[in-house]
Image (tube, rainbow, N blue to C red; front, side, top):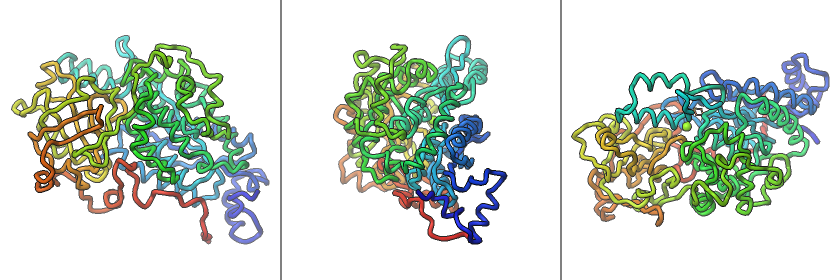
Length: 566
Ligand code: FES
Ligand code: MG
């Protein structure tokens, strides 16, 4: 076979001379006849969850060399969930676009994708799908469990819990601050079943990792072994011409949705999977998540829905042990990146701790996937994760208390005169992809201080934003169309009755349609950026129900570049 990179390196003409001469770097003489494998590395000091990936990249490189390839480290745009403002999600599509273009522009035959923190694996998979070069993921793995005063701390989830305890007056500010240095015990991404853990496991369920490696803790030597093996595999992928479009199809996404439900994964996986499918031309809709996933039992007892952390999950058997329990729900035709059916890896899987990974007969939640709601408040759809909600609130009617932006929310939520009670429905708008911009994780609004003091711990909340995968509560999120795209959320007023009926899959504002239509939509607090990426993003971003990609990035351009550079 002729390698793609041969279009740069082969031949006696001047440009091939230039390409080779600058890339010779002391390599063996036959280096340009071998598969050139990029290691797309999202390591960055500003993405602490991924900072160890440079060590992982060395193991990948060893495996690539050993199998006869040439490893080439390619630093990619890295998104640190906790640092990046206004929200890392604003930059997911930019990271995907930059990675896609750099893979296409360079003499690359295949790529190993190194990600960890929330947006990094999604953006890398979107890029790989659109350039459609042989690709395989190594998830960077979760951090080890930290403890504070003998009690394990779950990243994210316990920050929300402890800060609410401070607001409720049951934890001192000094103790809260003291817990800070215990929260992040080691390298690696968040150790709850948040978005990073979810997307690593979903990448494995899609078939894009070597089966059995997702969830290996970041400091574990077995991660390096997996990275080494993945490096070898990347060379084989090039020889076999096995591309994302060869592996990923409707069956793979079906399995990813089953896995997402069985692990009790983050709602963020919905926008990411829709966006990845959009790049591949795989037909996937919001309703598929409800149809395929909503009746799948949650088998994994991890925070935020349960008790344990990723360390425990790995020890208990990992994703393959979970998938073995729901084998009958999987599509056996889906392949892993190794070329073998994903289900062929389940025979040897076992549950080693049935408290952490429950057998099918004793699920944590009987029906645990994501429910898709529609109604007069969300004509194109909205999500709720029933397993993270209060059962009594899944059917609820209450008066709206409306906030136009997160700043408006923060300014008023603790005002003792705010007209709100436990039955109210908190509505936050202006937090969609276009309105913020970037669809931040703010939908799990903190409760009013005066209600916390009364012992209220959950309320129905409705928002066009996302919520952290580590959060919990009765939260209706990803409302589409968002307020800033002309959705009915822009016309809701404080006092309007809102009804939620998760069983009937409905979210409605009980205002006559003509009265609602006659109201002037709110535009206060919606973004209107002047220039740069934000302007491009706001002009082109799609709504949450189709994955919040940019309209011109949907689909694939393949790997061909028609013109020379010299
Ligand atoms: Fe990086 Fe949570 S902040 S995974
Ligand atoms: Mg997160």
